[in-house]
Amino acid sequence: MLKSMLIGLCVYLVGFILVGLTVSIYNGTPQFSFYRAITYSILYLAAVIAVCASLVIKNMNKS
Image 1 (cartoon, rainbow, N blue to C red):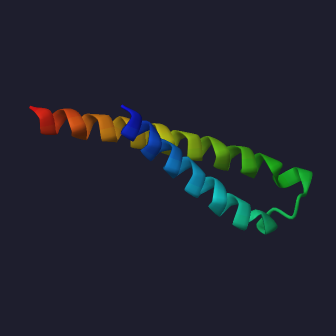
Image 2 (cartoon, rainbow, N blue to C red):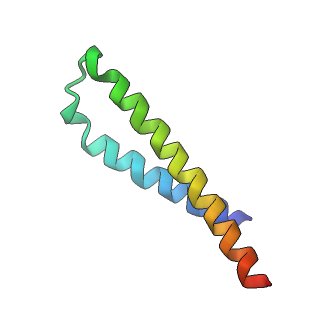
């Protein structure tokens, strides 16, 4: 379980770094701030999917 959580954390951190590097696209304007919120929610979803996929693969390998 810990390994799966670390995979999800790594997915989130890599995505967070990519968002940090591309923040110049938004230029800090309030009208585009919702793009950043959407991006963070997609990153969170990707991390959850990575954890779930890791757990499913682990269970499939056990049986």
